[in-house]
Length: 114
Image (cartoon, rainbow, N blue to C red; front, side, top):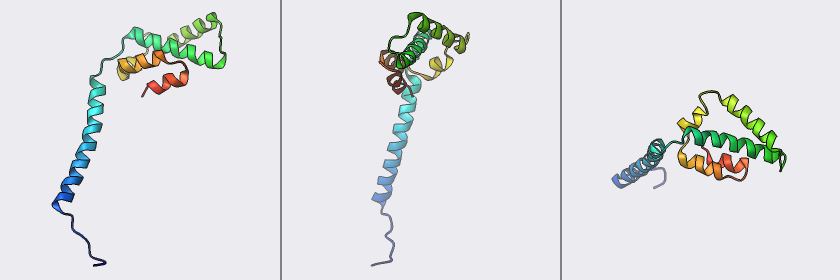
């Protein structure tokens, strides 16, 4: 009959609950796996910073001078400070840093990171 509301059946409620729990489980599971994943070493984070600087320079000039690359890397390390690239060590996983270090361009490197 038009205008009459259909009451949700027990099966509908259980199906909806199962879908909600599945989505919550996937989100929570990904967060837990990420939190438990091995973290990169300070050396790997320094290499990531150096690689990023190199790739950005290569995007501007396909064959930058080695001295220019070294100078910019030193500037980036100085800007990162004495404590190093702390966000890298705390927020990134070893797999993300490995992916980024293999990247062929700055855009590819950024795609490896969350």
